[in-house]
Length: 336
Image (cartoon, rainbow, N blue to C red; front, top):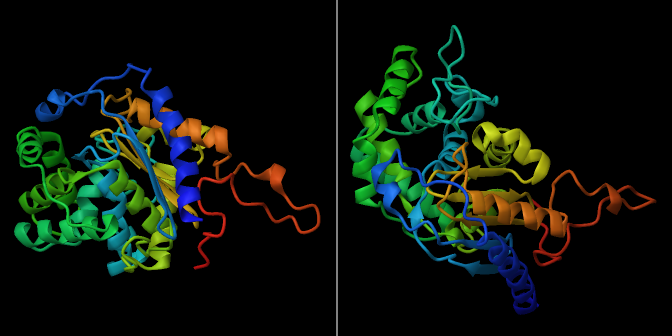
């Protein structure tokens, strides 16, 4: 059964990769000098079910830096360790409607709008750390636990980002002045930049998404990474805030909670079913991967994956929806 499911999913993924390769629009993230030099052509996708079925297509094993995709998973651990109420004291839960690097702080409180924009992510990361070395090790452990393997930092990208971090440093100073930074500014920025510079693949992002989809249990390692509440809260924030200032259109057109990054990656989640990781470096004006969006949009439209789109599948007697079209083992719905 797993082999048949895997082959069926892989065939679907191959089709959307082939279609996406024809789209050459978008630009590299040139504001980070090291990212301005990457090959723009790699395009890959992977899907991981909540029972560990893995399928992939294209350049799914090509490494790239995780960038803002990391924000969702660090936020999940902050919710898990500190509790939702403690984190929300410093970082809100509302969409900002602004660019990811905007100075988007609540009037009067100076609190970032959510943990998936830069200001909110810097604050969230700072709540987990005491010093830079230990903080970086902790973040690497967090992301590695979600991915199910040890991860490492791209030092060249890290150094490039540190050299162009003026705006993030300014945000950190504003957060510190408002009492929403859990460490000193230099430590917060160093660990945050390290976090964004971690190397992953589309397969890694799919495993990470599947870990949230499975209620916080990594389906590859079997290890619980975060509790069910933290996983649910994180998925909810991803649904409303995960695609920068294009989150509303994403939710309408694709309908899967997701988090993007300017490295070209997107991690998407269908709770109880699977995670998807998609990657290609060219970005649209909001900072989201053009081809990754196209791949995920095509999958959603072709296979009925929109989380709000199963009205036609309602059982006439009980009103219970049938599962989404098979992109995962049909027996794999998580019961947690």
